[in-house]
Image 1 (spheres, helix red, strand yellow):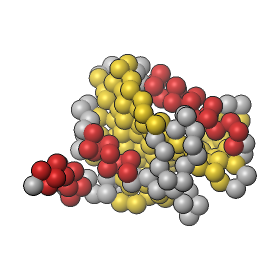
Image 2 (cartoon, one colour):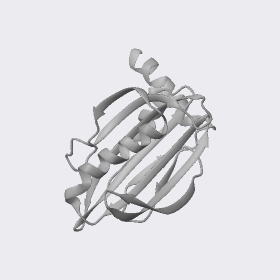
Image 3 (cartoon, rainbow, N blue to C red):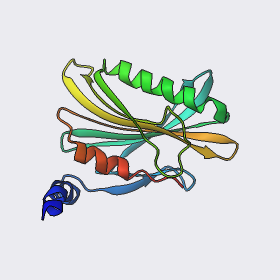
Image 4 (cartoon, rainbow, N blue to C red):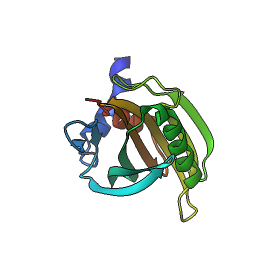
Length: 173
């Protein structure tokens, strides 16, 4: 009975019409993610380390939260840790993060990098309003290079159960 009561909020969130979970993949060789709404997609060129890369993005908003999954491919796997660390630093700086907590995040198939993390933070939106975020960064070997993955959820008030559902949906090929 206790287990049922603990699982009930997660089950309700997963079955809610607000959260219509669906699989999202950029192409067959990329990680699979679950997003709770129909995503918008885009790409843009960014610089990671010293190299220009194409950043692929998919994201959506529902239930008062914004969900996003991003993917970048690097030719040099040796710079994956530094690239993840820089990506995390830029994300947290962009939201003026404080009260940051970090934990290792190593889903099956990911590279065992100390920069593969799950982060919880409080910060500010561009308009100055408070926001909570949970985010993960990880890397996966891909041919002679590496795929970097960043998934994040932002909300005024963010439940761990919602973030857990989102992050548990990340599957590496």
